[in-house]
Structures are given as C-alpha cells and as structure tokens.
Image (cartoon, rainbow, N blue to C red; front, side, top):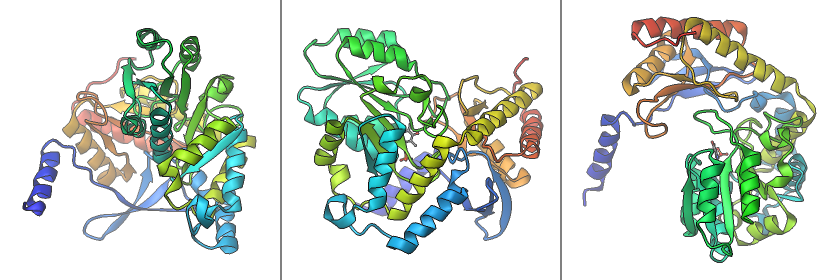
Length: 405
Ligand SMILES: *Cc1c(COP(=O)(O)O)cnc(C)c1O
C-alpha cells in the first residue's frame, strides 16, 4: 500500500468538506492575558486578543499559580519520574487529591493526565468491570465519555439531550436488576446550556442507577467555592461521581474524578489509563492546587467573568448580532454557514487582531456553524467594543441576518 498517498487523500477529503483544522500559532503573554503574539506561516508576527480560550478566568497566569509551579520545579525538578505506583507519586499529587475531594464534598479524588483520560478511563473501567452494567449516555456527551463507554463494551442507551423524561423511558425499559450508570455533563460546551441535574438525579435514583457528571466547563466558574453547577444547586451529594478538568478554568492541565473512597480506590486499582502512565509533573499538581485554593475563597474572578459575559451579550443584542441564548458563560455567535464562518474568523484574525476559532461540522450540526466566544475577566470594555464593532462590520459585508430585538 502507498501509505503516503492514502494519508494525503484522507486529508484532502477533510479539506473539501471544510473540516481540515488549521491551528493558530500563538505565544501567550503572561501578565497580559488574553493578549498573544500570532506567528503567520511566512514567519511574520502580529498581536492578537484571544476570544476563544478555555482558560476562562485567566488562572493560567495568576501569580499564585505561576509561583507555585516555579517553586515546585525548584523543589522537585521537572517530571514526576514514574507512574503513580512506581515512584511517581509526589506529595503535590496527594495534596491535590485532598483539595479536589474537599472541593466536591467527596471522600476521595483521583487525578489523571487530562480530563479526556479521566472520562475515558473512569467510565471505561466502571462500565466494563461492573457485571452487566448498562450505560445511559446523554446524546450530546463529550467524545471522551463516548470513547470510554465504547471501550467498556457495556450496553449503551443514548437518551435525548437534557431530557429526564427520555432517560426515564430508557431506564424503565431495561431489567430492573441490571446495574445502571447515567452519564451526563452540567454545562455543554458548544451550546452553553445546562443540564437539569436535580431531575436527572431523581430519575436515576428511582432506578437505582449511579450518576456520573462531567463538570469540566463549570468547575472554578460556578458555585460559592467553584465546585461547579452541582455545588451551586446544592446537589453534589446526589452524584456518585463528579469529574472535572484542571486545564480549563483552573488554567493548568490534568483531569480528575471525585467520589466515594471505595469507588476512587476501585478506579485507581483497575483503570489501565490511570495505572500505566507517568504521573503529572509535580509542578502541574502544585499549580492546580494553588488555583483551586484561590478560587475556593475568591469570588472576584467569577463575578467579573459573569459581568463580562453580560456586557458582551447586551452589546451583541444592540447590534442585532444573533447569539444563542443560554444560562452559561459561553456565547455562541451564530453564522449558520461553514464557509462564511471560516471567512469571518480569518478576517477577524488578519484584519482586526481578534482570534475566535470557527466551529463547524462535525463539532456542531450543519447549518449551526458558529463563533464560540468565551469572555474572561480580563477582556476590557475596549476589547468588547472592538469585537462587537468588527462583527457588526462583517455582518454587513456578508449580508448575514440580524436578530430582531
Ligand atoms: C475539554 C473537555 C474534556 C476533556 O478535558 P481535558 O482536560 O481538556 O482533556 C472533557 N469533557 C468535556 C465536556 C470537555 O469539553
């Protein structure tokens, strides 16, 4: 087989469909978040404002976090030096797991190298090792959950997005004696909608099912201590497992689950994706711990974040720029056409120094192509004015429909 031409053909297919991903080559400016230098393909550079980062609160440059990471490197060096079992468990990992268990009001926590790995490994292990387990998965669950469930080879039922009624129908149709696991998210990252956690837990409880909640887009951002939507709604104790990331609002990297002591010990002891991989660098664990500690006691970032989101939405409304109405911090500006979406994003970057990655099929359904905008506490009034002014100009140039107020 001619492997090279096979690869080239597959890539051409992506390009023809408009799905080929081009990365923006950036150098972020610590201390000037969300500013960055962009490197063009010809080697020239220009300054941009990042409007699509998941470092939602700018914690990736917070002095407490940066200092904790530098101190940990000075103390322990660069890497962990092994898997958790073979010399890789550093005191910083143990502290981080305590911090996370406390954040979610659980007995234990277990950290992984990413949120993706935490979902893949925890769901894969639970669903495969619990005999006869049936998994009930929300239709819009993240790829990491879908892959974990697939890997488990457990039976799977997909229930209608955010519908406790459909979940109940699916649960009722199965053998009452079968072990059941309900997997869903709190904030969904593309539409920014929020699950009815209480109603889902009520249904799950009626059928004796475990509940597994991905709070990746909510931890650090919601709840009095940044514990997520379940904390805000007083529901943390209703969930068997709360999963999160250290890479988004906490600004560093890594993922985790929290739950009972036995459950976390079970995953620790049986999950291949936990056991056979090098532990996170101690500096990451130290940085994440500092970030979580800070956000447990400081609400200033969360308040400023919501204020920026509200301001952006109201200015978009004033100009009639259509954006999806949702109760979260994610502002999807709807373009509804793949090539226009890509074109607008290119012009924003090249002519206005505004970086928003276009979101096209297959990440979102065709016809709902969008710019997924994520304001942070560090976007100034002037940044917001500049963004809305640019969108307004491009909306006219592209003859895109306006929303009626
Ligand atoms: C980003 C994301 C993950 C993966 O987290 P990482 O730490 O980036 O690997 C898991 N779940 C959802 C819903 C996500 O958006």
